[in-house]
Length: 536
Image 1 (cartoon, rainbow, N blue to C red):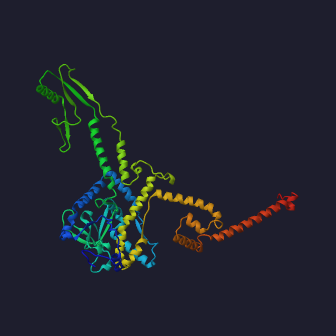
Image 2 (cartoon, rainbow, N blue to C red):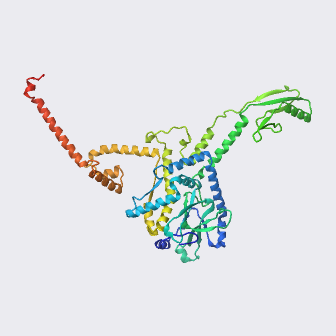
Image 3 (tube, rainbow, N blue to C red):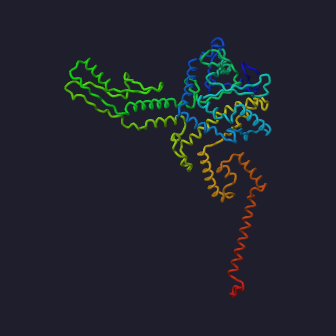
């Protein structure tokens, strides 16, 4: 199974399908891989063919990590991560959902066991938050799948995280000979995908280790800069607004330090002194009355620092004879120093760029569980965004599960292509807004059912109500009916038919009782009619 370094998994049926597939459209690069041709010289030179793009990509990753250290960005990332990965002391953050998979129960149990093994290798229950955050910030995630090449049936033995700065996916395209026949067949050549790893960083040297595609789990963000063919992070949009916010904050600090205090202006009368002597006289007066004692935090001493002039010092200006003589005036400080509208604007724009509702920026705002109509639209968009992130992040678990099942012999590579669409991942959910909306929707459905129930069997069928009003799927209808029948047999609930019959019998008894009471009112007993009452 060894190919390059690592291993490769591919069934015979998949190879045939790949050879038989033809299209006039060239293959699409959805993961921003470096596409190269083998005509650039010996193996070690191919990395340098796309050196400019690679440097830009590495610089972007470093910028993303620097951004994640900023308080506002870190808070937004934590909001996203906490919504996507919900930790609980009893439950795992994610479980395997196989209800739509049509295989035997024994195979499902094996798949659940292997999935639990993968989570143990990742230490997912404890490290899920860190893994997701790392993927969200960098925009990509790499894991090396370590197996026993002598005995692959042991499955995955270890999963090792790889820094994106040290690895790069490469697509090698061997161009076919140019002739009319091959062009008409839309032959775009043979494509080989692999990874290049270098412990010193793929940007520092042209050398690297070629690792087979199946030996690496690669999860990109799905956001690609088509112009530069680069994978971007989810926080890429916030680069501009973060820089603007930092520059604005720095400028405000400088303005307030320079304009906040009141400063004095000394007009010194120099009479008819020549220019040079006037300047000397002004310096003498300044040094005489100037007191600039500063505290040195490094040495703990107080020293005189008169030779340096700061922004907070007074102004000394000469005045010729004929003026008003020596005078001292006050320069007022800056006005409206407490205005922060522009800061709040850029903070809001930053949160919008990070796909987080701006309302979460206000830490003192209370959390109100009102009606769903009152829920902020931004919260609904945020919930949908987190759902998309979960689906994309699940590619990590999907690829690892595929490798583990094939290596263990649970399934064949050909079977995975038919099964993968029916394998889902159930994450713990902790969004009160969505839960509240679901409950209110269910409440409204129950209100409609109460009104429609009178017409079931007359104008509407039960199947119509379940499909059109409750929006049950075919599988849910079957499962729900089976569960109801089991609960009736177990005596947990009453049979609706028996309930109807009982209600009918009760109604008939009530009607007979009313007839008897009415008859007694019309024809009372003789003792009551004569008014004889026993008073003992």
